[in-house]
Length: 242
Image 1 (cartoon, rainbow, N blue to C red):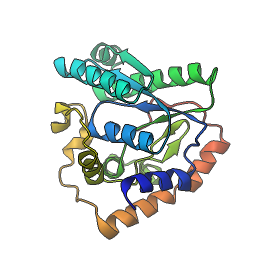
Image 2 (tube, rainbow, N blue to C red; image 1 turned 30 degrees about the horizontal axis):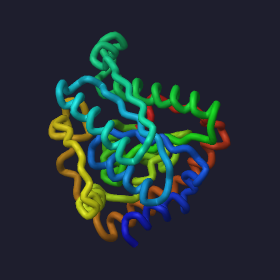
Image 3 (tube, helix red, strand yellow; image 1 turned 180 degrees about the vertical axis):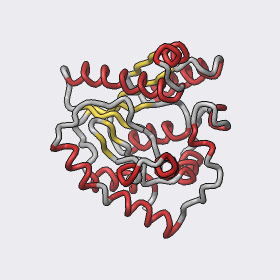
Image 4 (cartoon, one colour; image 1 turned 180 degrees about the horizontal axis):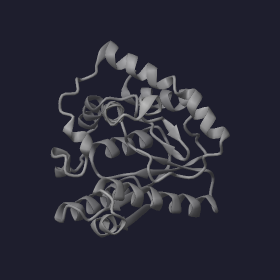
């Protein structure tokens, strides 16, 4: 199956969302979120785009915002933009930049969801986390000593957060982007570990073939945990979700 077919099958298999749901795509302008937009479009889903400008990279942050504006025009999608004083918030709350940005991001997403759900069908926030991200998260949790719970990695669905690309490797997303002539912006902070500790794990192996398959099969075994989460009524977004 090609990536689009795998995307559709993953949504169906994990019952992530339905045609009548309103999708809010978290879009940075990087390759992962750009591919997510294109896949949703090709699969026939309508969506809204939400972009966070954390104002941490000067002109690059403004460039990314302008790029996402044009991306929303391309897909004729409603666009929500929010600028954050991330550095000031982090200092005030005594948080790392990464944690501060996560709190601000998911807090804003929750506000958007609550507002939209008063007027529309159920809403899901879609993020573009992929298989490589999940491997990095799992390894970070392992080294932080989070125990068995942390070793599950990210879930395909957690409350109103949906991660429909966890089946795909970064390499597959890059190939899809090139095959579909997609443009994206490059985040220079990805080249350092200033804001993202996960980037310091440079020795992680590339997972392909049977290794990739085994890892994803293991992830699917967390379906029991997702069912338990639904029973506990996890209807709000935790600002500390990955």
